[in-house]
Length: 222
Image 1 (cartoon, rainbow, N blue to C red):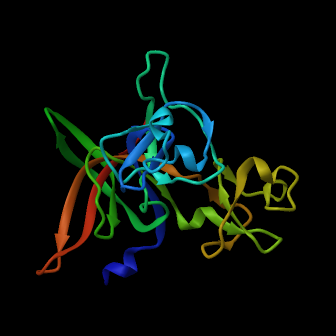
Image 2 (image 1 turned 90 degrees about the horizontal axis):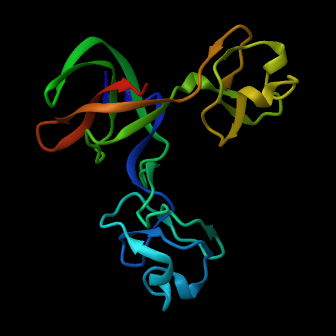
Image 3 (image 1 turned 180 degrees about the horizontal axis):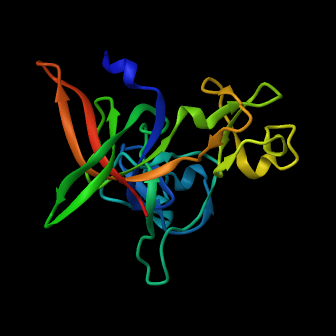
């Protein structure tokens, strides 16, 4: 089986970093320290006043593109320290993957032995044991009666009342998503939302010449 044949689901890599992070014109990441509406004068790092609104994170790869006119919220706490959370990694959002069970494989993490729930196959991307991954199963995206596609946001059994978009309660269980992934909605199917996993071990697989893909052992974040 070719590696490409394994890629039937989608995932987003998360990294613990400052919130309200953007990419500066120097390619580095900056986090917002004062709420404002983005103007050319405060763009990091070409804006004359950018240091009033942005501080460097000391890294790169997490920030989103800075957009003129966007309202940015300050990401510092009452002590003036950066607020952190699990954020999508820039360019590693909605990428193809394959999720498989491991059969209870034990993994040593520091001095602790833990059980990996799943193995994730990814392309040759930058991912480490400090990251998390949100996996969305292909079966959790369906085509609504309007021809658009919807992703499961709450676990449920498919019934007429929650069918997108004719079911009276469909908005409780489904959210709109971009085209290209959906399959037919099936009555009686158990649909599940995206699940977040902790990366326990990353293994770099090669094709004999260079890195080919990553295999990650993971457990569900509880």
